[in-house]
Image (cartoon, rainbow over all chains, first blue to last red; front, side, top):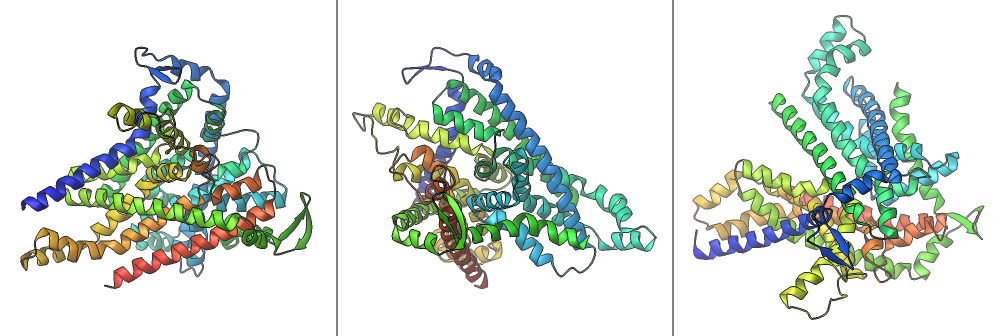
Length: 265
Length: 271
C-alpha cells in the first residue's frame, strides 16, 4: 500500500468509528444515566445506585403494559406462524397460480410505510365496527410479521427434497399426515428463528400500533406517553431493561439462524 | 383450503388498503361523514399549506437517505474489506441498533440534541460555543439528525450486500492487469456497488418519509412534517377522509421511490 492509500483508509476508519460511536450513543447514554440521579438538569455523578430499577418495578402501569406487549407478541407470532405454515405448505404441494399474488400481498405491509398500514387497518376496523383494543393491535402485528415468517419457512421448504413429500404421499399418507410427520419436524429450527425475529419486531412495533391501540396499551405506547408528559429517571432504567431483553432475543435469534444455516450446509 | 389461503391475506391486507383508498374520496362535513364522494380532500392538499409541507418532507427524507448512503457506504466498505470473524462481528454490530426500541432511540436523541443535552455540553466543554445552542433541537435539522442516526443501520446492510455481490475474480483481474487499489475502487468496486447502494438509500428514504413520531419528539413546531400532518387528522383534527387523502399522496410518492430504486438496481445488474 502506498502512503496515499494508507492515509485514505485511515481517514475512512476514523469516519467509520465516529459513525459507530454515534449509532451507539443513544443506548450508551440511556444505560449510563439509569444508574445516576439528576438534579437541576445536571447529572449527579457521585450518586451511583440501582434505585431507579426498583422504582420502575413498582410502577403498576408500566408492568401492565409490559405484560400486554408480551401477550400481543406471543399471540401475533402464533397466529402468523399458523397462517404462514398453511400458505407456504399449500404453495409447495403443487403448482399454484396464485403464489405471486399471495407473496405480493403479504409483502405489502413490509414495504409500505407503517403509517399507510396503520391507517388502512384503522379504517377497516371502523367499517366492520371492531373497537380498538389489544385484539386490533394483535391483528396489526400479525399483518406486519406475516412476511418475515412466511419468507423464512419458504426458504427452509425450498431446501427440502420434494421427493420426500411425494414419497410420503405415495406410501399412503394424506396431506395432513405428510405435513405432521415429514415436513414439520424439519421446519422446527426455521420456526424458532422466525418466531424470535417476529416477536422482536412485534415487541418494538410502534408506528402501526399507534393507530390501533385502545385503552390497554403496549410497552412502546406507555413509554411514549411517559416521555411526552415529562422526564423521569426511572424511564432510563426501564429502557435499559428493555434494551437488554431485546438484545437477548436478538442474540438468540442470530444464534439459531446460524445453527439452521450450518445444519443446511 | 384454497379459499382460506387466498382469502386470509386478501381480507387482512388488501381489503383494508382498498377501504383506505376509498376513504380518501369520502366527504366529511362538521365532523360527520355525509356518504357522498368528493375530490375535495385532494383539492385541500394542493390548495393548502400541505403541498409545501410535503415538499419539505421529501427534501428532509432525501437528506436522511443521502447521509445513510455516504456513511453507510463508508462503514460497509470498511467491513467488506475485512476478513474472517471480524467481518461478521462488525456486520452484526452495525445491525444491532435495529433491535433497540424505536421510541427509546428517539427519546435518547432528544436528550443528546436538547438545549441541556449532551451535544451542547460537549461543544461547551470543548470551547466551540459559549452558550448552549438551539440549533439542534425543535427544528428540521434536529429531525434530520435524529432520523439519520436512527435509520442509518437500515442502509448499511443493503450496501454491504451490494459490495458482497461483486465477483472477486473481477477485482483480481483488475489487479493482475496492473490497476492500483485506488483505481480498482474507482473503476470496478464503486460502479458495481453504487446501484445497489442507491437502492438501499432509497429504502431509507421510504422509511423516513412516513415517520411521524421522530419529528414529534425532536421537531417541535418548526419540525412539522407530512407524516405529522397525516397523523394529526386521525388524532386531534379528526378528519379521517382528509388524512386518508394525504396518506394516498404519501403512498404515491413511496411507490415512485420504490419504482426508481428497482429501476436503478436492475440497471446495475445488467452491466
